[in-house]
Amino acid sequence: MSERPIALVTGASRGIGAAVSRSLSETHDVLLGGRDGTALDELAAEIDGARPWPVELTDQDAVAAAAATVERLDVLVHSAGLVELGAVADVSVDSWRRTFELNLFAVTELTRLLLPALRRSSGHVVLINSGAGMAAKPNWGSYAASKFALRAFADVLRAEEAAHGVRVTSVFPGRANTDMQREVRAAEGGDFQPERYLRPESVAGPVCSAVRASPDAHLTEIVVRPA
Image (cartoon, rainbow, N blue to C red):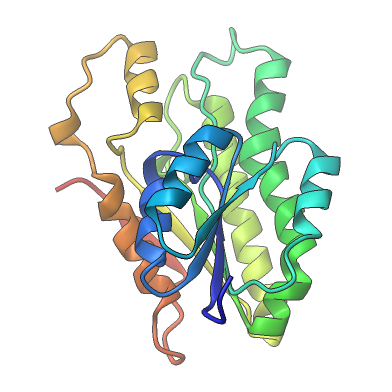
């Protein structure tokens, strides 16, 4: 890594995470977090100043070991996520646990481990939330609940870390043209029409605007919807 600011992006192997990584690379060296080592290697070869940071985010020991390798950090973007649809009457407790493990607990633990580095740099934490984190709909129970909790975590973190100069931004995108959205539409039994959804790059732009905002402007929440 160079002396440029360093950003760590989880879920970087595809979709919004990959788009954010490409956009941030204009001003930052980027650690590409994810499970798919091959995809991370391919993206790292494409982006100057990027390198893979492979880790299973639901494995606490693996996360602790990976976080220990991060000596300097300016930006942490949480983009990894999981959605499993179903009515409350039908969704098992294991599905709820899987959803919360990745969408919430992995976020809180990785943030906790990296806070010393973020405090030293007066850094920035960006949490890719969802429209489901603002309004819950039928069959989205576990996902919406995890995203509501993620919003609460962001609010608490922002208040607690203000004294250390750490900024916290929640981003609430509408439906985006991603592999996850294809899976969601299949589960809903609907057609996937990419032209109706946000491009991942359209979410990455506001993320980078928050990170690059002037010192007198703290973008705490950003809502992005398809036009």
